[in-house]
Image 1: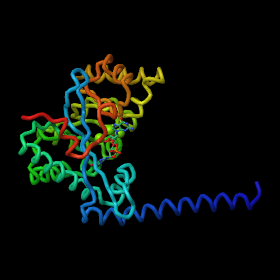
Image 2: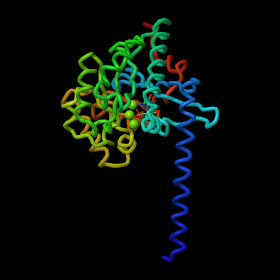
Image 3: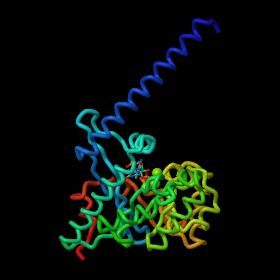
Length: 277
Ligand code: C2E
Ligand code: MG
Ligand code: MG
Ligand code: MG
């Protein structure tokens, strides 16, 4: 390779890095205002009981419609919020939305199943994270029965002891805990029984492949049977086809979440999945 072509590729690399960091700065600045200007809102996706197709709960998922940037995916802005210290403010907005939505649904006579909330890693990694979180829930009138708390394995690789203790505190207060995106992180199988979790969510990247790959099918079937043997409730995320649902049913998976049933929906659409109390 000549010097000039090497210089050329470095320039291209530098340009794309510059673009990435410019986007990061823009999104960071906008997100800061978005929180104050109420641009964040929450959508709800049903978790279905596979055996009887009943609604077992909803997962609350944050959305951001920015007047300047358009709709920004949480896949982009949640990691950014975690890096820039904005995640606690985002979590607070989400909790407020969940709390007022539950109150509204109850007032209007609906029977409201537990709402799954995605814990931020900071809540579990800080020494007094669980205590602070419990105080916040009390402020918003949220009880253990109202919520399922989801966390991802990536939180577990840092401060393992602190994470375990925070989970213990939350579980002791009666909250159900779900290990989210299982299979994508670095968590050991040991975490499944050491941590005080009651639910396991198998990541959609595995579920997507169970029809086309025998290996993935075997992994997911094995995970389900292992989880059930230690009394964990198993949820498959990202279920999109009848074939996938049928395989999961056969393997004894408890619940499914995915486009085959419904996409995340605005409250007015989600409430069609609720029954009168
Ligand atoms: P997650 O907690 O694993 O949420 C499941 C994601 O899978 C959601 O993406 C959901 O829309 C998507 N999904 C569900 N069913 C299907 C399906 O059948 N097919 C496909 N292709 N996708 C499906 P979403 O809403 O984009 O959220 C992405 C991630 O962002 C979440 O993954 C979660 O880690 C994070 N996130 C979302 N809302 C919040 C929040 O309020 N707080 C925190 N801390 N993180 C959040
Ligand atoms: Mg989740
Ligand atoms: Mg998940
Ligand atoms: Mg996921």
